[in-house]
Image (tube, rainbow, N blue to C red; front, side, top):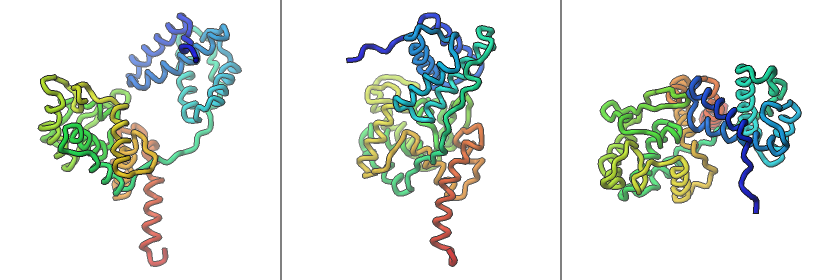
Amino acid sequence: MSGPARQPAEGDRDLIAAFLDALWMEHGLSDNTLGAYRSDLGAFAAWLDSRGIGLLNVTRDLLLGYLAECVQRGRKPRSTARLLSALRRFYRYQVREGRLQADPTAEVEAPKLGRPLPEALTESDVEALLTAPPPEEPLGLRDRCMLEVLYATGLRVSELVGLQLDEVNGRQGVVRVQGKGGKERLVPVGDEALDWLQQYLRLGRPALLGRRQSPHVFVTGRGGAMTRQAFWYRIKHHAAQAGIRKPLSPHTLRHSFATHLLNHGADLRVVQLLLGHSDLSTTQIYTHVARQRLQALHAEHHPRG
């Protein structure tokens, strides 16, 4: 049986903590992003410490050796690229602070990435998933509401579970969302999802809370806030109930939201705003999916298709 994971040396832990504090203060990164950086940098520092080396004594060859070892252990190219991005930011910060003269990541190339298409459900699969939870039960009503809101808005799962009561404007039919980097946006909910949201707030949420209080819109059977992991478990459960065999991810409904909007003629920049993408190129990946649909429709309906 393996022992506990090795921890980085105390001095390296302090360097990582100072770097993360600076990131938070200067860029307002989310807790999820900071947590990923902390984990990646901590694992690298522990790997170095097992070789008697500190974070400020790293060479390009050491970095390449560590990245190669990560890949051999099964780390995917996209995950490796995120790791290298964290290391680059960390070492650029150390150079800026005067702790290093040169950045050891400067000549390390990022792994080549493919351009994976987002997984999206068909509209009939979405309908089957949305109608899987039993709305006559408080938990089922909550799940139906969460799925409806997620598909109607394209929120990230972290944004959905983090939604608070004062961020819901039922009269105007919008929710106020704190996105990546603390950026705020207003997202329309749509009549169908709004009906489910109001029904949940009126009937389901009070039944789940009992006498407890919570600022969160979506709560567990014990009155606590829903988590990404708990909601992901519920999505998988309802997908199985609906007979959906396609591979799912927590963002499948977000991808489906974007793809279906484009399939029905929505402007790419409108989809960008709704998704909260700061860069249009991030949204453009969905046009590949929509283009496949348009080509299929053309082949099916055009007289010379």
